[in-house]
Length: 278
Image (cartoon, rainbow, N blue to C red; front, side, top):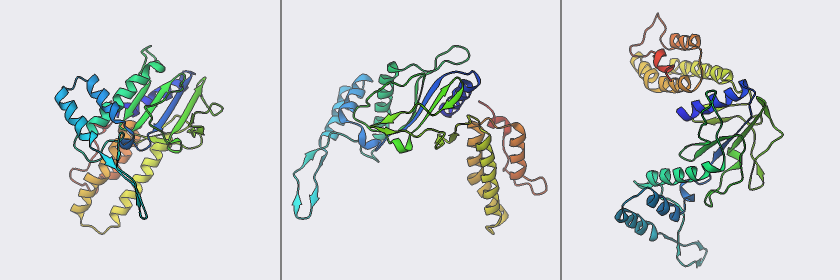
């Protein structure tokens, strides 16, 4: 939540302060399958993991083999030197460690934007395989043989507080679409060329109306409707309240829609104080 909020706040501050800012939302292609095994070992060594644990993990990954069959022809076995096994107990931990190592290695290549107080922010924020790069300039760099998907990535360039499209970023000679062409949704927060939350807030209210109408027309008994409101609709509404700058009047309107005074539903109410707590 902090990454989505700070990214939006930085972009909005850049527009208000007539500043320059470049932002890239990058989506890693085949995330788990693109982590080299040597990178895993290097990361474990840097994080001072005991040698017995490193040797155990190295032995685990050294026995991976694969071969290809086509008709009556079958290739010989080949050693697999890249990729973390999906579903393995330690896969998420190894992936997070490796991605953190890559991010820390790339940070010296670019400088993050400054806040209004003069504090410089980290240039790269990540949540699993989704990366957000915020800097005044984005240099060319390689990510340990890993690739990003240009079609699912987005870019934004601010010059003197305005979004401009004359500057383009490329991944392997393929242009990254800008948010003026296609808005991007990162960690549940939508970013578009307006740099404002108005459209997203209106969309959230419209979605809430649709969900409420669907539940009302479902024919479920009242206690089941209350359960759907509490465990299905309410969690989906609380997240936008956390990542968007929602006016208190809008929050009160949403609260009245969920818990109308004439038919109160026990336990179905919005904590407006918690929703606006940063």
